[in-house]
Length: 76
Image 1 (tube, rainbow, N blue to C red):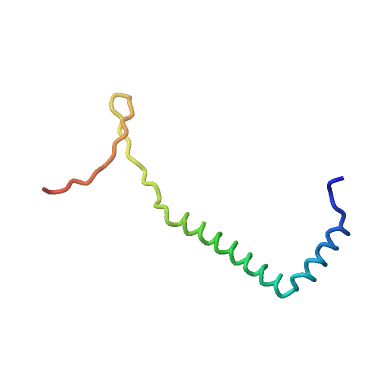
Image 2: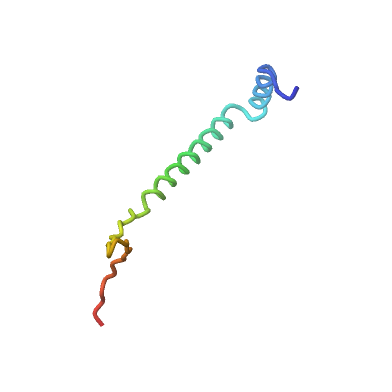
């Protein structure tokens, strides 16, 4: 009922090509491809910018684990 056959899609494609022309459709395809590529590159850069998490040392005292954080001392 709600689905279209291959003939419906071919007729729609021919009408779109007649209205916009192949050059315009090619430009739209290139713009869309460039946008997708830019998005993927941006996602890769965002993941590369994150610093690696440093492992925090742990210390065991009397069978209990104590999490410690090392801080640098500054001279005042």
